[in-house]
Amino acid sequence: MAEYGIPVQFDYNGRKRMAMMGPFQHSTEREFALTVNRKAIDDCSDLEQLKPVTKNLLEGWSSLQTAFQTLMLENIQLRQAMAVKDSSLEAADEMLTHAGQVIQQYEKQSKRANRLPWPFG
Image 1: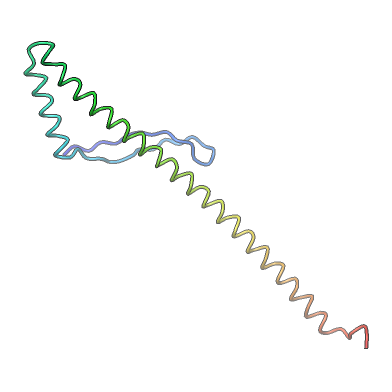
Image 2: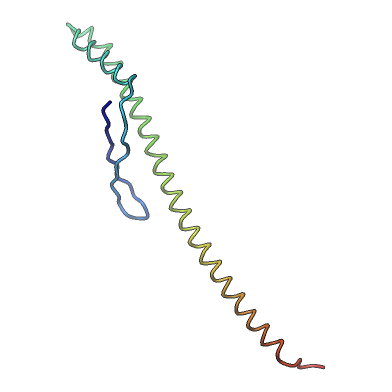
């Protein structure tokens, strides 16, 4: 079976990227549909025979375009969600680092306070 890829351009983290979706393979069902429609076109001898074949191909193409656009949108949304997740993890890491530093400061202050006599007594 023949493999093919689809080039896509998308915006990721504020940068334009180019990537290939795939590789995809033509299924046996798709090959069968192509063969049947090619034969129907080759067997057409007048315009009236060609119209139903053309409409069938147009509807199939339209369905594929809709499916493709939906997959592209889902892919872009997934990449955006992953970018948000990455930035959220970075922010959480910074917060944990800062919290650790604050805790260390309080521990040092607490140790110093335990060594000094109480100012009242």
